[in-house]
Amino acid sequence: MAGSSSDHEGEEPRGISWTANAIRAIIMNPTVAGIYTHKGENVVDENGENVRITDRPLMDFTEWSELVATLKSDRQVRRATPSRSMLGGVAVCKNCGGRMSSNKKIKSSGRVHHYYSCNNVNMGTCPYPSRIRREHLDQAVDQFVNVTLGPLPVMERVKNSISQAKIELAESEATLDRLETDYRAGRYKSDVQIERYWTQHESQSVKVERLRNEIKSAEAAPTWRETGRTYTEEWAAKDDEQKRVFLQRHGITVTVGIAEDESRRVTCKMPELAEIAEETGLQIPEGYLWKEPVSEYSFPARVTSVRK
Ligand SMILES: [Zn+2]
Image (tube, rainbow, N blue to C red; front, side, top):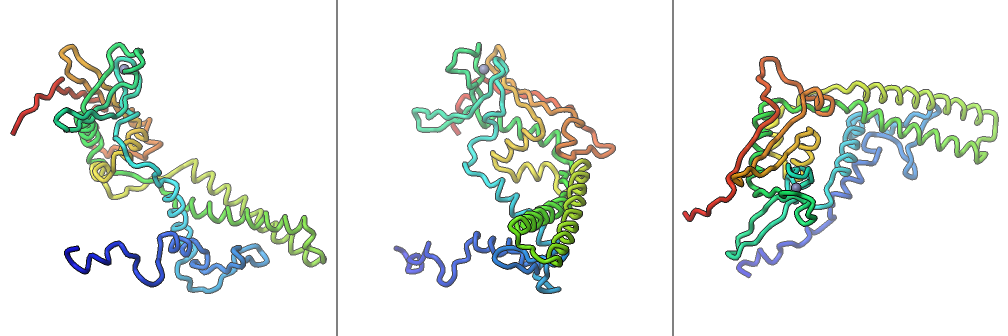
């Protein structure tokens, strides 16, 4: 050990350990938004609306709902496996139409080379299995995306109002379920209780109906807004796995063939704008020269190793 300070490396800090999960659990608690809870359930008033603890919560309900929605969706997209390659499973062999996958070859010198090759190479079903160095194909696709989409603004779906509506809907549905369970269990006995049951039930049913309609119409006509980022910035910030998802989402196809002189021919193609606009919100500003969404790239068969 070079210094005594390194003795403490990797130790947990003393005191309470604020793990991400602990903080997450606190944030997800409706108390943050000033909602009164009892035994893990939101407490509702006679109309079935949330009861507030305070008029000055840490976050207002709308902000909090949006944050919870973000945290939930963030968790869903968290990746279980590390990124492998950008184009494995995306690139297609021109000679058989099969997918290509990434693999590596270790040269006798110990140098590692990565390739994409036709999945049918061992099946005998491809007349001439395509094979290309990974850096070449990645480079072609990098260039294609940057030339085709690069300076355009990345759009995002305006969904905050919907995500909040979805949370409110889930709450109202849960309240209805609870009311009905209690009712069936005979917990409402007196006339007053039964009357209030129907009042609450009516109020929540109306709310559920309204929210369902809101969500339905919002989803049917999504609106888009600029994120303030360009495609070049967006693309550069992605890892290989995210780039693969991007390519699939934008319907970009990558085909690899081998010419007679053994050079590798790569064709990158993007669908017509109308085909992806619905999914991505992509719009071409007036006056912008929209490049042909097809490009071909050629790479020599062998890269003769040049010693520097
Ligand atoms: Zn093939």
